[in-house]
Length: 227
Image (cartoon, rainbow, N blue to C red):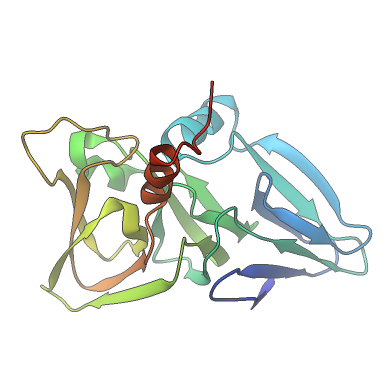
């Protein structure tokens, strides 16, 4: 699979170029268009229980859509719900990435998306919470709300980032999830009131806008969901 992006950095769209018969995993509802003859199958990725964990903990859809190119090859265009940039992670089979809620968009069929990853045991409460993990090989498309910043940490270098601004970080980066204000009880699944402490070496991808801030603004202005 090859990836070509357009309309970045504000309204990114990724075109996934597929070889004859090649499949690609796409977040449910992210497809914008396909070339003629591409087929789609929505399935519970990894079985019912793993898909339930992915939806409840990872913030992704219960189903993952698999698009398969016809014998002449084809393409799939994918786009996120929120305006912002796209980034392509090229997995080499050695270093995986932890991706936050709603930021995974698509990946090659040779990549794996997990919520119950052993590395999450080091996080607050021993749970992955709102994180998913991508490993294996091939390109992975992640999306952000706003512009994308890349923080490159040297060995022994530290940084603290609000969870709402974290898109993804490499496995080589050490991480700790904690409450910014220890006296306030917050939700681990939503990430509200929590920050990440990161230690290098490795990269951390961040977004310049916080989706929770958008939700709060909509609610404050009477534009939130009504029951």
